[in-house]
Amino acid sequence: MVTKKLTAAEWMEHLATQASGACSQAAYCAKNELSLSAFRYWKKRCANIAKQKDQELVEVAPQWVTGVHDLCAISFPNGCTVRLRTANSIGLISALAKEFGLS
Image (cartoon, rainbow, N blue to C red):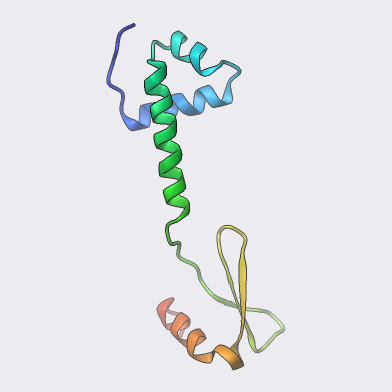
């Protein structure tokens, strides 16, 4: 087997190709002249990177709920929505609006 140093992007392409096919990891590596241990290393490394990205902060924009004058809703990319009553949270709502340039 010829060992060639691959970039992270090339490993990610191999991982995606193997995952979408019917070959086992061992068969895919043999067919593409890849080290099985390196393949497994990169699979674990990419999974850890994806896990870290899931834990990063994301930008969200608060929106006023239509038809309800005292309710603000913040929807996150994962589908979670936080609803706040403005009467109880006016300071927080004001700070959020200022942070997101809505005031």
